Amino acid sequence: MQAAQTVVFLHGLGESPDAWDAQRAVLPSGFDSLAVDVFGSGDGSDRAVSFSLDGAADAVWEQIERHGADRVHLCGLSLGAMIALQVALDRPERVRSLTLAAGQVKPPRALMAVQGAVFRLLPAKVLEKQGARKDVMLSVMRAVSRADFSGQLDAVSSPTLVLCGEKDRPNMPAARTLAAGIRGAELCIIPGAGHQSHMQAPEAFATLLREFLTRVSAQEADND
Image 1 (cartoon, rainbow, N blue to C red):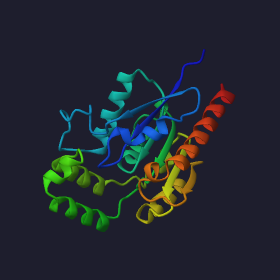
Image 2: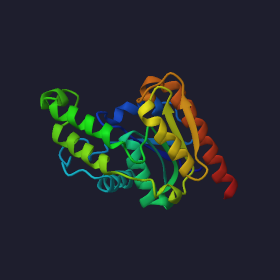
Image 3: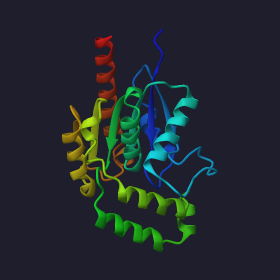
Image 4: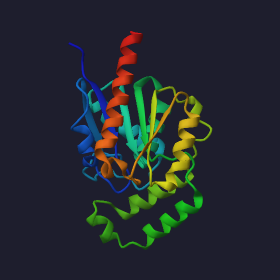
């Protein structure tokens, strides 16, 4: 009996791993799943305020190894998509496929400055009610504002699906850049959805993900 293939879900900023419950519940037969906390263990004890995408990618992979997986399918949204992309660049032989939703390549500096200003003005207690720490959020914003994958996209070797909500205008240019820059990548626009397409259009998101995973799995079988 063939072992199940693992799909690892990476949440966005301001979300928690349970944001992926709808997608995890309807994966194709032969797949299991792991939704990780992109900041660490999930208990808040190791949420360093010196956030970096490299460090987050390493922390995510440590959680994957503890799960016992060797090669995985990665699916991330927003910040999670950027971390997934970093993992795929750092460990190409370990990534069976890549699904990038609402991801960024080189975030617009003006937009990041505005978002950073908003987070700085928000009282810490407001963010804590949403399960987020203000110092961590600001550290993430600084790291993301410095990110630039534009010269690395052609190094991605994993089959890639790029998703973007139809109404997610700030991230649409990046979605098109990801799809154009990653060899063989597919771009799918999710009708009626905004930035959090996995929650705003969960059925459409899940359908696209299932179809993609099934195709990748079939291609792997054909190549064996």
